Image (tube, rainbow, N blue to C red; front, side, top):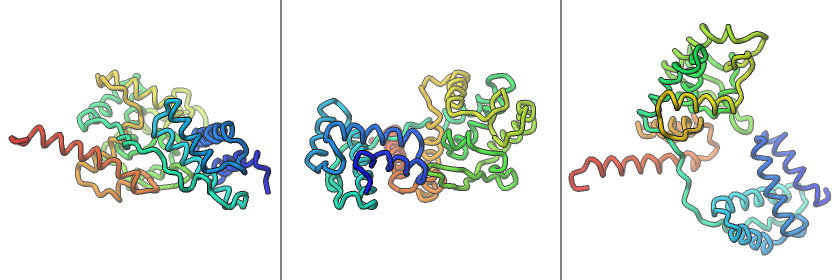
Length: 293
């Protein structure tokens, strides 16, 4: 059996290399486990009481219930892994209740704002406007994460059927459709701009002015540039476009299970957050429209 001081490292390496969790996720998990170890000692001897005391200490430090609940979920997952490895016979975090918190609703654009943002993209950064337009069309039109968009290769996009193959979180692959507007933008970009940017052989769909693959940092910068052009007074991140994609589809009658598949969510309850936004929208329309509201 592995020494207890090596458990966390083995767990993190498994998440990263086998489960293909993101670097940011595994870094956060490692930090959470390091905090627990500093508070309660060796992982092989930690008890439910000590984890409960650790949780209470985090609340006293001013951490939000949401953050504490996330940390407890990490510890619970870690000890499930330890049980499977035969390192522990019990899960000391298994029956601990997480602090209650109100679900954080995804932040979205209105349909008009999303339209203005995407339409403004082609007017930015001179000749790079064609790339920016195609990129935002895919973020909003296919509901892609930034990392998914910049990871796209030329062979992932089928311009005939208007489907794109996406590598999601944990290496999960999905195939999602994109619309005629996105196809028009991609056509313009791939015919009129991309060949002039690429100086060496690369399969990357979205490239920068040096001809190399875009990064997620570049995507954030592009969205900020387009925001100025669209005159939207909101601090919008690229992920807002993914949230807007799901919310606007739901508001227009799309089935929740279909949206789950398009977004690549493993759990339906993750997708169900968007129904809360839709309900808020319905309530607002009612208040604004009904004479006795």
